[in-house]
Structures are given as structure tokens and as C-alpha cells.
Length: 111
Image (cartoon, rainbow, N blue to C red; front, side, top):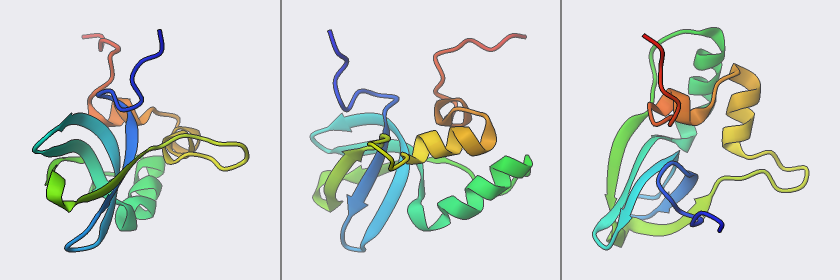
């Protein structure tokens, strides 16, 4: 059986209004009240990607909640044909999974 398209841990793009924003992140939950993600505004993504690729600190993912009345659309981030998804691009350029960086990886860390 295939997992739901919008299960927790799914990379997503949120399109919001009032004010207009686009957010990339990892889905934490979807409820009638709204959507929770570990994410970053899409406008800051390129800076964050370069920072992560260099191993620097500064920008990062934060846990965000958006009430449903602000959510215009939720898209699953995925590679389609020749168009690379944001999470796949992140992995290619940093060598790490977006789930790992978001702290939501199911892999257990060694101590």
C-alpha cells in the first residue's frame, strides 16, 4: 500500500495569502485548523542552500504553523521528468537529506 501523499515527513511547498508567501519545508501535520511544517520562506532558500553546502551556520529551518484560512495550496515537492524537486536538489548539493537537516529523519543517530 502506498503512503498518503501528504504524510508527515513529506517535503512540501506551501502557497499562502494575506500576506502572499511561499514556504518550502517538511510537513509536520495537516489538521482542520491549519498546516505545520519545519521550513523556510522560499525567498531565503538559495542563501540557506549555499550556507548548508559550505557547512556554515546561520539560517535554518523553523517549525511554523499556518492557519488554514491563509493556505491557498499545498504541493508535494518531487522531481518530475527533467525538473528537479527542491528536496532532491538540496540532497545533491549538500549530500544530506532534508529530513535529516529538519531533525525529522527516521534513522537513529549513533551516540
